[in-house]
View 1 (cartoon, one colour):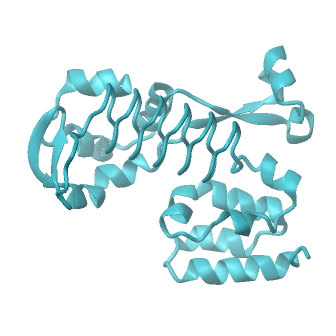
View 2 (view 1 turned 90 degrees about the vertical axis):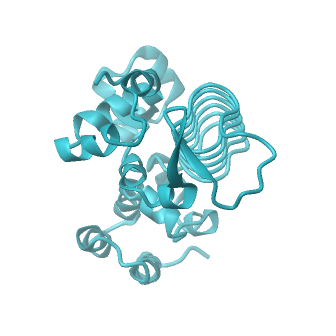
Length: 240
């Protein structure tokens, strides 16, 4: 039986509270008047929800199916697990391509986060099979810009650059007024939703992300060990 909306919201809010959510976003959740508003809060905070494991497929099964699909959280493609994946056989979230795991990958057979190309692991790699092979080190030295650093992987996972990159949005809302005929055919519910959520290429997502960063946050990237402007541009499209 479908759970009462207020009960569903209350139980979810109680679970979120365990992980000290942002006060303003938590207030948005508490003040949500319907399922669509709850799902919008989740969509806007998908990284936090995934990191703290407060959302599952079973949880979303309690929502109205059409409302969930229109929220943008649902997967497209075939045999995907996780959330906001396009392509096929992806797990994690915000992946495109196929056979990716981790988060925000494009290309094929990537693990880790923000990778393009094929068979990469780690974060923000391009090319093919980066990060070595047959390694057993539980906390290996991190390579940045093709060179070793004194940073260990576990330290990198808590680095501010990683936290900032969780804000990269690989989707873009396209209002129905500017949709092409092909897009309208591909997304026939656009009249109801007044548009659709488009998955955009990593370089375009990086451009949007970089444009909205403060100068101090940009320096988080440009002051990384071994920073190389040419490599950074090759991966992100951003010219320093």
